Length: 131
Image 1 (cartoon, rainbow, N blue to C red):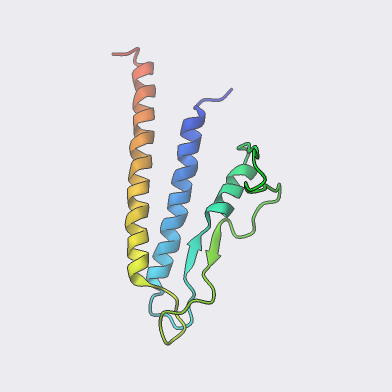
Image 2: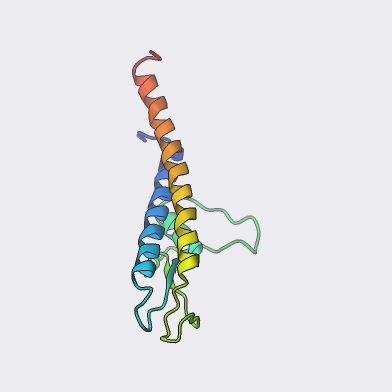
């Protein structure tokens, strides 16, 4: 028996993605002055692959859609931006880009938390009998 709807499960996956994105952005900002550090990012394709591997079904309706493998991705969606250098010391962190990504991720996270809070409020209302 499933306790929560697919909506709550999907929102949970979105929160997991946002949390991973926050960690990667924080690492990039912390290593802004580290010589030779290559900035990282979270790949949507890899994150989607992980979700599919955890039991969320996917059906390809077009040959251009991503193919889904059963194997677990090794890096859990985190990819390194290679062949990019913004500083003379080989560092590829663009602090302006990272700060913009941080703000975007915060808005995304807030939207997800508002939505999941609304779902739990609805469940609470049902448990109380609509009172």
